[in-house]
Length: 246
Length: 108
Image (cartoon, rainbow over all chains, first blue to last red; front, side, top):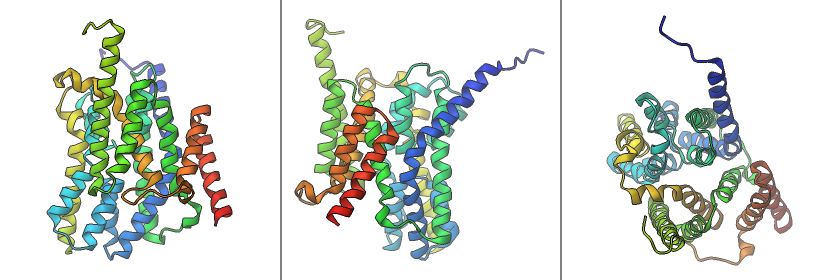
């Protein structure tokens, strides 16, 4: 038979990447858990059918967008406006998509379709650290593991929130684990002058424009900061090659 | 809102979300992106993380208060220091959470 079995070493390596991705997502899950519980409890309190609340998490699967949508549902906004709001809140995911497109270019379509589905803030944050490390042949398994860990946690925490309420006392500040994990991922992502400039600028601009609705300020802040970072890098490269353009 | 309208929102929201995430991965191969665009991509992660962290720690919209009014900002700054020295995620979280809890006890 011409069908060759994958050597067991390769499949062990893929399994290892998958579980590593899931494991590296755990700190974020601590912060995501209360958010899922609160979403479930809020949806229930708003009088939505249990199945509808769960379907938001199952199908839309986007934390901040779900909270925005729920608020608009409660205030009886037109469906089209709510869908548009969800789109705007999630616009930043297009940047993640662009950022990972090259890493995933070699994969068959079913992988791209599936990994796109899982490309949340949290999965992007953790997996982009993985993509800075070498030996990337099986890194898509890492992304799958990290994405599925988040997806499963989001589903279970929403369901528990619907069934028994939020439960976690606010005074525990468990939600704070999420920005703290982002801090832990942010620091190593700053590798040189241009990335430092990008991060500082993005932080300042995001706060400055934070009053804009639907996370629009964040999107603009990121685009401007990325542009300035790239510009700083190319100027630096021009300087270091004695003014010669590549 | 009727249950039918809710399902329209959910299915529409699903499509809208998926469109943003699949946009480049599924529909735009990297070789179709201009070179300047691709050069910028390595800056997306630090930019987004910094933007999310800053808005979570400082908040948005309101006038900035004294640092004492921002236990989360101070706990986050300590966590950043720990992250920088240790490069350890759990240690970073532990330091930040402990700082926030302690300030909660002390400041009340």
